[in-house]
Image (cartoon, rainbow, N blue to C red; front, side, top):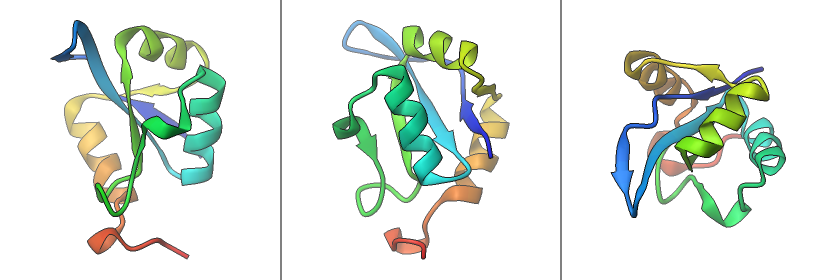
Length: 92
């Protein structure tokens, strides 16, 4: 299983932001915990169809050092489509 990050290009509240996604939601949470990202920052069903965290560029740099796979916009969209939960329902 892998964890993925795209480029930190979205500006908001004085930071640049990106997405942290993973092939498995449990892996996503474990990796986010390693980064020190609060679980309350998690975004997933039913709020959004793809389980992910929005992280800052600083957190992104640390994520890459911890082994996250850097992705282009096209690659992260493919990951998003692969991990999304149809209609926000929890996968079993």
